[in-house]
Image (cartoon, rainbow, N blue to C red; front, side, top):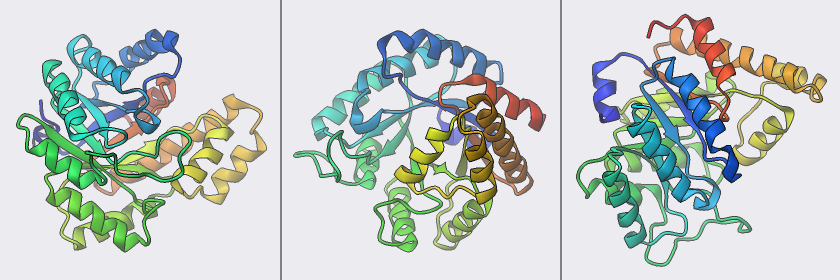
Length: 289
């Protein structure tokens, strides 16, 4: 089922993100997580593409199993990285063969070892080009990424929002945001998007912080601002992963609770392939699924 249809039928959606594990032997652990998440009746599961497109085949494999064996709707990520138009067309054919109808279209991060993204020869340099290409091939619903604090490479928040508008105008059906730790950031982003004429549903992405290293890496990679109160708490217990996860889960719950009070279209939880924190947040929210 197309996500755009789900969003039309429901006032609120619940979704989770998982990623293909780097190590071959961890797939069954991932599927155990998906089984746990299935009990929460999510509207869809998104499956990432891996840095630099490094897990393309696994993304297709996992997305297919989530869709066809777990009987959950899935949104498979697809990027421009190291792919020609013909490569993308073949991947779309594989998605179609596996009955995968929803795609999150992203430009993607630079390949490993490279600092900047360069347009692949015969490929796409921007997500809006990828969106337009996918849209030219019938049978897909297209989501795109939104950046409440601006994409790290954008010259300004205004320029980044204009880029989001180009993706929507190219044919995107919905928007899932990059993670953020302060809800005011999301509310300002949503208001600015609406003023610019972006009317597609915007689903906020909430991260389930599980260790200190994640917090440091996320701040460096995507520029997400960590509130000082959360940063101080996590730093004090940085050598105690269980305590960090406790604070991270509590913070995500408070974020989600406030987002619900302020009329969001859904919640998209970045699970880091662990089900327990997500289960706790949904339980504490007392969501009627």
